[in-house]
Length: 428
Image (cartoon, rainbow, N blue to C red; front, side, top):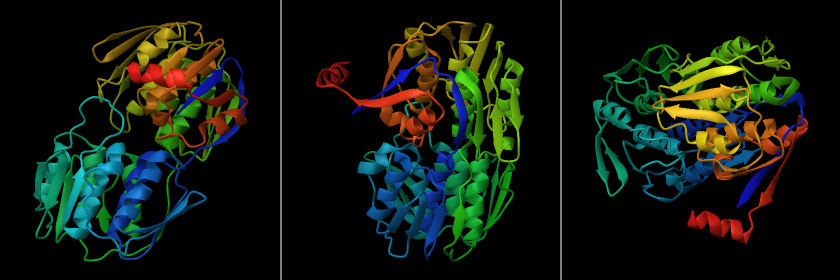
């Protein structure tokens, strides 16, 4: 196991290129199961979640080649093999295997998903959708069993706007008989990306990106080539990094329209931002003002950028309030920021941040993916050296983080944990 060492106080300057979208990749890769010939996805991020999904597709008989961020999947020999344990437990998005395998084989056995611990994130809306399409769903010994004689189209109203449920129902419905209508669907760019891949494979989908999606089922889907969209959360993280420690950073391979809520808030804070067609320039901020943030479903402020922005707000003048309406438990990074001298208190679903405070390097631990990003930003802002453990979380979502930051002028490196540190972690 390793830890991340960050020497703060080095201004960032230059250009950083954003990788393909993690939240698209974890749905696009399972979607390849639905085809009957090879599918190529270009521009995937080189992250642990992608490697885990590659292994899972191989486990059920797929042939997968992943070279230079391009993945080609031949699903023709896949079988409906149960996946109750093992790799499937390591990532939250393994639930997309349910919709894809149900759509291809009319049955699936998938272990209850893992990933970041952000409090209860039930899959009841996914199950509601699968049952409406004609599947029986049971929970047996910690695994979800899905069985159907055949899937048929249905009208499905989601009680809560859910990206996962919207995509999972799409995956199951594209080969079902008849028309499926998903109402109160999520509108995230990643849903449009998945719908684009499925359409290229021969699916008939209308309305992706709106709150009503219509799917007319087809008997077969074929292989195709698809280029993934850029990762708006990685792009947003680097924009926040640039605002916190930058001396002029150009973020390349980005769709600025996907980041309008963040751009608006950074400008409100006094950060200089110039958006082009596929680039965003973040200039140095002389003095940052406090702002209030409330996370909302897309196109509102993303919950995945709440934690990174909290670190930035410790350096702004005045009192800021960050309210997370999506995941109430997403404040585990606050205790770690306090170790670094931050003046923050949590009240219910809100964090109240008083600034400006000069952060101090400390030993901190990432409890989840975006908390890890928040601690990296804090480490770059801080005086002295910050040690971040829990890198397995950061590696799930940020491709080549150390190389990208060092390319901008940061001083950041990985070190192996000593036996004593490993022992301390076991006993913690």
